[in-house]
Picture 1: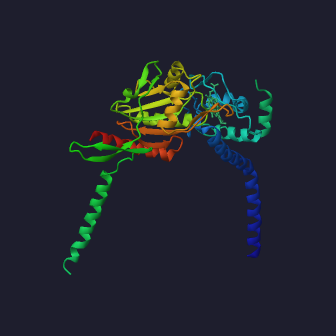
Picture 2 (picture 1 turned 180 degrees about the vertical axis):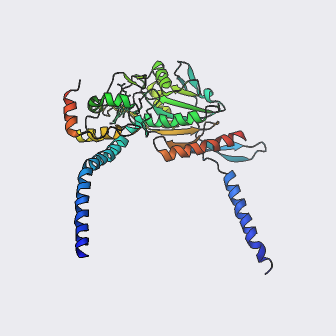
Picture 3 (picture 1 turned 90 degrees about the horizontal axis):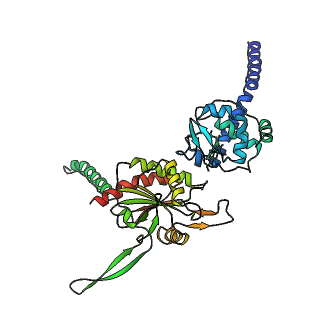
Length: 140
Length: 217
């Protein structure tokens, strides 16, 4: 009886270790997502809206999954340095001005990108601060 | 003790009546500083009247380069605010909220909107027109007003009681408050709501029908 209990306990400990290992990446992404949401509310929501809906033709929505996928490596530059060009989102041209966020650290930008690329119909998974550092080297 | 049987239904009725009375009598206060004035009556006696703050006559240019004056809002209620088109902080939120109200009342010509730009250098009528169009606003029910610095800043602070400032040390050169100010047909201020605060915007949405009902009487 005692032996079975012990085996059971050991097995469940091992199982939970394996389980949490598998999930540490997921957990990390979850943390990034939550922090990213706070940053979004603070720095972006006034323009892009609580549901990423944008504002008329003044501010583009964040619901164009194709755009966000194709331009993922450029998002760090856009967020950090702002944007004053024309972007085409859902076949609509937007030519407003997005202000810079020079004060944000790489990790903040990574968390923001994880948030917006996993919300509003997007589901692109994790993005790491190391990748942000790389992306920022290629800013125009 | 026979009468006790009636007490419960009766008090119940009283409470219902009280509630009904409350509901009907909700009116919005008249805001702003007030004065008194002596009025001479026909029979020679005098009485004291309260003089409420009113929005004085004004004249600006709108998004179509046409004059917008107090008469534009004759027999209308309107919501006024102060903003500028290149504002990246509170204005987008204010105008997102105003736009939802604008859309809710799109079939009601008695509810109008008046946004004054405080960027007298850049926001000329053609810029305002572009902004309005991109926001999704056309027609005359939402007026975007351009005027000299003096005229706009004075009416903001003295009449609508909204603080606005040119501030070269601020990131965007202008600083202002995000009030949405509700004005009645007599040009009295009947409410001021923080246009960036969802609860206060919700309150404004509740107050508009109350004011409209009062104006109907």
